[in-house]
Image 1 (tube, rainbow, N blue to C red):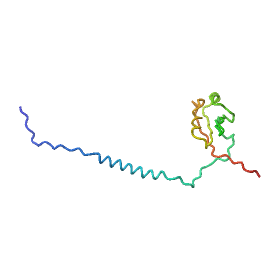
Image 2: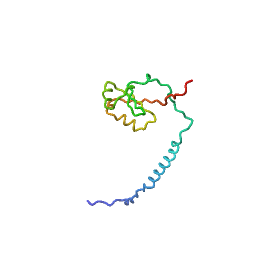
Image 3: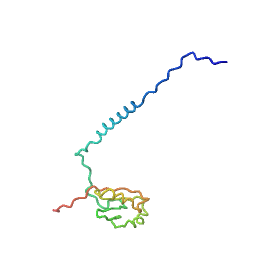
Length: 139
């Protein structure tokens, strides 16, 4: 049996829409969005905001064990000098170690302090003291 020809004419080939224009429009809209929102968040900080400062802090109120990196480069554990090599043995029985470093110290000093082998395996808590009371003339 021979196959019969179809009764309907063949459908015309559809052209696929060009998506390049739509992609360009979306990219331009995203660029405009990020430019507009970036301008909102990059404003200068208001000068009327004052941060809280600690002025009186007794040494007895600091948490223990306190590892302190002083501005002269000395390393102290609970106000006693310690070397980086002896740090592991001194901190062996404790879990949390509190670290105090000057706020004006460069970040690499803090990261190099935290990279000491004696601190591995301990939870580190950063203690901050914002300012020391200035010694003025006593009446």
